[in-house]
Length: 361
Image 1 (cartoon, rainbow, N blue to C red):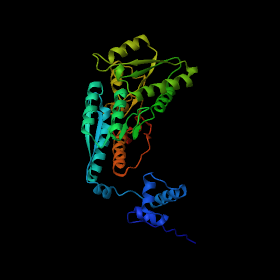
Image 2: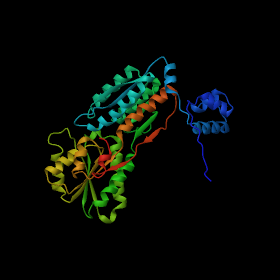
Image 3: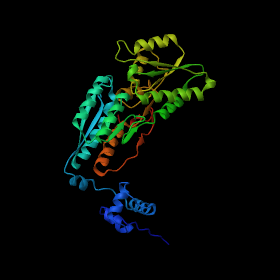
Image 4: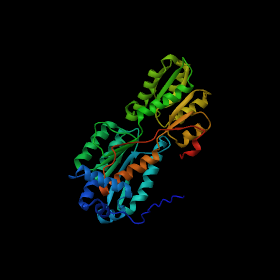
């Protein structure tokens, strides 16, 4: 006997009034559940949410946007993605992809770029964004104190903000996209421990000016040091932390030469940012490719050194998706008032020369 199972395929868009009819309630009640507002009994709420899930209901973005005569403008404030900081080319790619998708829905974006090493550049752009009075903001909070004050000003004006790449503690924002920095530091340390020899040293590198260390980079360093300290006491491994200002003449070679001379037992280097390639270039020039090198993000330069084996591991956080999702999340909130999950962590991917070809730059 052959049991035939028939699945009904819905070919028309499920509407709010369809959900209301099935639930035996008014369209207003369904609307309150969708937007999490007003008084609705828990039993009714559960019934409506179950019907929404079963019917695969999705809001009609086009119809909603057409009903909105005033266009929404989203201001995007991120660092410049240039030769000295190529990482930001990747979130920008996702942002532009999202911009193409939302432009037919009466929503557009305006991009403001700033010098990641300059507080004054950041502040200038913050002021420009405030004066432009956008409907919403996507922000990379590079300088935390200035970004926190900026968020207060946005809140006073009723402008929602989505954070990208990092988040601000004790600040009010709509949603934040980024990696769990502490856990990514744990992971980097675990990878390092697979190959580090007992009695050796690890160099933990922060490649930025001391006043420009971003919060999530410090969290990566904390996670890395914490794992090494707690999980490898029998190996007698020491960590030396070094901050290098890449804008200073002769860097990073000058500082690395000094560190190597003072501590010749260095067997591993952990770079907390996407600039592992500059350390890889140094290692090749000094014939030190035997040192384990771990960094972040699949920039074009990092890809080169990962493929030739100078970089051993890269930890990725899908920055393209972060850029895309930050815009789409803010657009959905502006158009539908749909509240997103506040903290949206990116996956922590391990990339090696063996699997690199399956990842885009």
